[in-house]
Length: 219
Image (cartoon, rainbow, N blue to C red; front, side, top):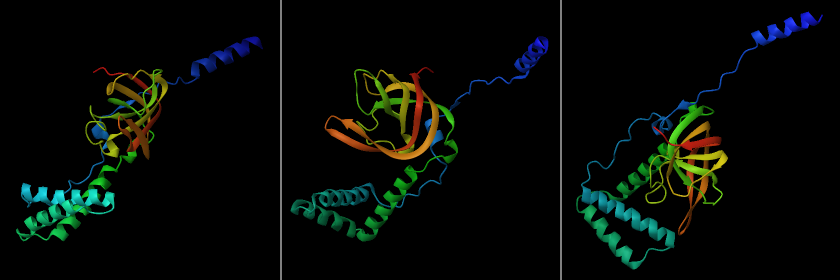
């Protein structure tokens, strides 16, 4: 009886499958961009000066819209800019409508993600942008593709920002520490408040990595 048990255990040990450690798929930032048709520039026939005038009109309207009323100085500037465009037989109202639609389409494209990546075990290199600094380290941050993103220049589009939660805290005394992050990536449109010197900014994000591992970047 004892001999039979020993043989059975030996057979089970021999036939039991071994589970190999899962290998992460190394991806690049381009991997996070869906394939889309190039967006045609509706202003390609405008001169640089005409495009500048158009964008200036949009700027003044946006600024004054936030203030609640357009200032006399800005009103005068908009009238002059509008006159410049009309002198070239351009329909300013049509240009402004096209500009608004163009920006809306860019925003839509920037929000598109690669659905096939959802739930994949991946490895991605980027730069750490802590949401908040702590002497004890950080366990959540934004992973961005280049130095200066969100701080010195406008933020990348949502499909080029990954919100990361790590299993353990990491040291991030300086901005933009280069790292490799490994974990399961998920498509999750969200926003996170990023602390800045002069306040905070809400950053739209297209991907998340939770329970991730962050390591020093090495080629």
